[in-house]
Amino acid sequence: MSKERVAFLDDQGNKVELEIIEKINIEEEKYVLLAKEENEEDAYVYKIVEEDGVEQYIAVNDDEEFERVLEEYNSYFDEE
Image (cartoon, rainbow, N blue to C red; front, side):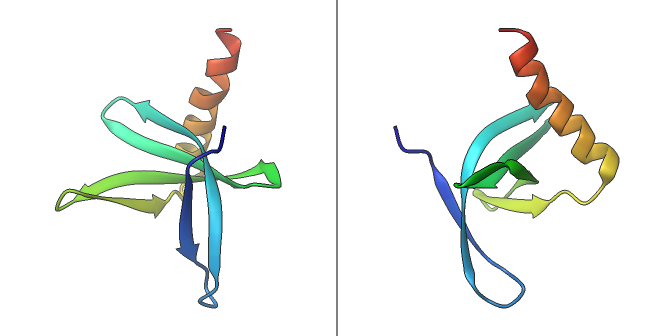
């Protein structure tokens, strides 16, 4: 099964494709965990913000918020 991908432009204007690993809801906030296809261990966390009906991904740079999202993601595996 192929995973959903999103594309971003990096700081140099190069297109970078990332796989959506998981969408996570914490209280009223929505997040997405993204990773390069060949390296799921190195994940990125983005907050999903809807503007004018379009989802925008905003990088999570706050360490506490980042850890909270990773803890929620990891808890999915604890329940299995």
